[in-house]
Image 1 (cartoon, rainbow, N blue to C red):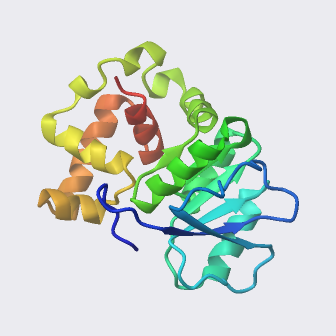
Image 2: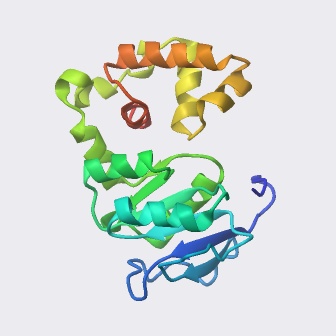
Length: 217
């Protein structure tokens, strides 16, 4: 993956997997944007055709069916996948996350700038949800299993400074192993912190924790 810096402009190679005529944002990619180099791939793709790409943008209506096909085509290659879907069904978003996507954008939230920023963010290792996707997941958390809307304010103060560091990294898309490396902690210690965090926030999984943290004041 290319190293991203603020001082140096880096061209991001993007593979967009999309059926003919199904792309929902005709203004993207902007022809004047030199930060993205886009190649279009028409599914089904039996083998992945972009040897040098940095990120995959998958446009589909059925992630449960299309994501396994994409991963099979990619083989052993590990690339961030940004999903673009017409709907924001909470169950579908959670399933897509479990299938390895790092970003979920919904048609109603799309514009050229939002797509470019989301692409840059996932290349840098961040998790990215469009507003409709994030709202669908937040609303899917039962009141008994997590804080309500009013409880998002002051959420950070519920955690210790170290737990806040862990959540900041988790919400940016960093996994347990890398969190441990960055904070000089063992995997077991990181998992202990996560268990404590889940208990304090009143939730039971990473997806709910990340979504609440992204909404924290």
